[in-house]
Image 1 (cartoon, helix red, strand yellow):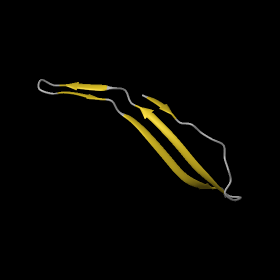
Image 2: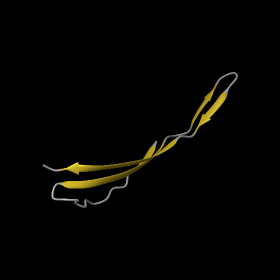
Image 3: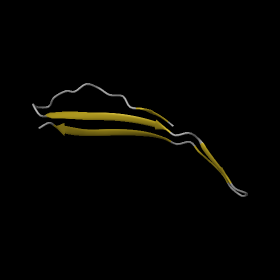
Length: 57
């Protein structure tokens, strides 16, 4: 499994509010399953975008 989470600096919306944008790419290894009748291969990766606002008190 490998992941790549880039980050960036903070930009203030106000004195206490900061936006957050995060992109995460995760690549899970290939998996192969075999039975007498069925053979199945899986290549799974995930792209995830998270958006939010953090508040400082």
